[in-house]
Length: 276
Image (cartoon, rainbow, N blue to C red; front, side, top):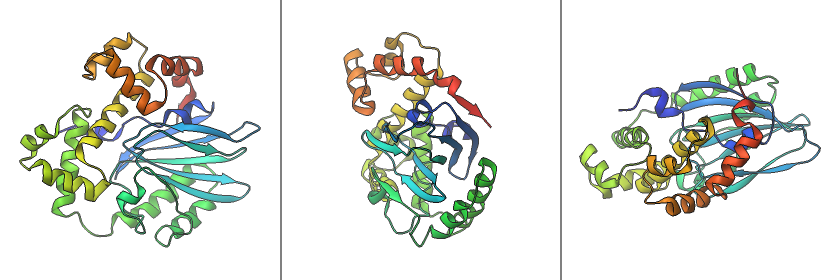
């Protein structure tokens, strides 16, 4: 089984970091949360940032002109974009794949690949109302945890949910580099049953989740390491060859690995992150 830290810290959406110079984060690693983060659009215009393929969810509180708009970015199954408004202040919560059940109006399949606005939903309206009056990083974290804790106490984990969590941990432990047939052997359940549980919990099958997790670990390594030969990444993450690596990376990010490396280096990615 993977460690609790490794289970949760699966990269972040990199263009939230690359888009601004004041990206702040606080690692949390508990109750389906990996970390909190904040940034501000200090530019003179709205900017549209790419969202890469992502195995986690992002809860984004957008503060602008005294008004809050709350976005839930579901698991991103194909590259898309997110608009960052001029002069807006953003507070974010990085959520693990199965930590979105507090949005009771939507099934996982309806959230998958979409951006849901939460402010007027009955299940999240009270949380959004309380978050709207918070003005700093610490108070936003405190208020969110108080409201999120109310959702955590609703119901108990059933057998299928427990099995899903255990298999997801196996996938993350192996950085997504595991076949469904291996999950059958490790869990003792058939692939059909495993996929049925994943569809129920996430709206996707286990193979799709393996691919997303694999890309998240790859992206995290490329963001955090001093860059080595790109062929080393292709080998480490078990791509058939360099062409396969380049094709898959571009499908998930919109850029070739070399193009992405250039962006990260020019923006001084690691220097842009402040840990609070």
